[in-house]
Image 1: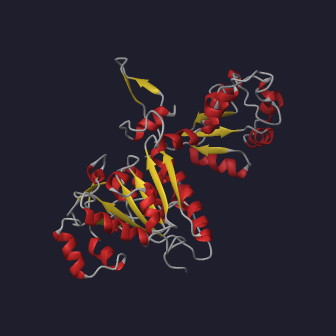
Image 2: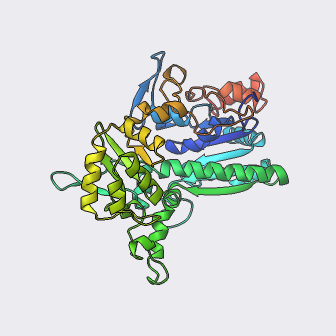
Image 3: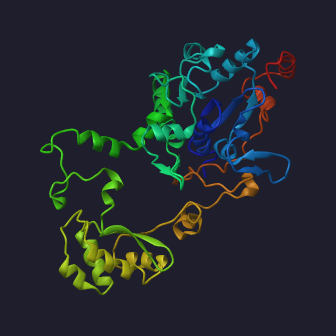
Length: 416
């Protein structure tokens, strides 16, 4: 077993607030030494959002968001309004591979820590700025929160209540997760280059851009539909009809549709004629295939209400688990329909995503979703630190300061 995980030896200095701290968290999950530099009072993300989780020793209360995105990190508190603290930051940069600025663009530069100054201290440093709308464009300085990037990217349908008032519909948050993910990927690419050339670089990532890129298929489809119909058209099984992008084009589907089972719901996906034939034979309804064989690919029998009624009755005859087993036994694409609340009881979830228990991290959490062979397993994450929990250790072990230097920095108000 290789200790420390695949990113063991990579050091990251991170200045972050709230959810964007996930970018450093992804790197920490893979074994990087992530030093979270916090302002006096710490990252207020510990008190934002819900749920709030009481620690196992019942001494602290911290948001689940903060517990998750900051797990595996170390924390130091620096007051960057104090010149001595800026010098400490630069000393940390000299030992690091990466600096993350996960807040409004230019936040570090306004404190005397712009990229040229960091590069002068460490030419191979990779600097990545992650912000809401990025460092350019008319929304650059617009205050925002995570849902804004999803509404901006067209991913949140507007719902209305019984009084006709609009509200935020339940949806999966994209930008706050995609931004850190794309940023972390770019960081690692830049680190590889820096190790080869000795030359670092600056990277700038917007959560809004990332939300849009995550949904590139729908956005690019609408863009393609602006071209003439003889240049961009639909599948042959649809007679060339331009169906709505993404799952919007599935609403009238029959052989590709959600059906109610005896105890829940399943997703039936007989896009290929082979799957459809296998289903009909396995269900002992060869008559359905004989009557509606469909085309070889992508024929969803759209608008076939008679067939949909037949399939509705068939799927009601078994439980979801029985239909999943049927799909396995008869080579037919059938999937369970879970919710964020029920998925943890799914046997595939249980087999692939074992909970990291609350006894270790104060809340039950999912592990990093990648598996490594040859012993490069990610390390078991440690609890998210309290603000400044590791200040003395970092100053001594990373910056190389002695006790007198640390004491003088405290007296100057540079560290806490």
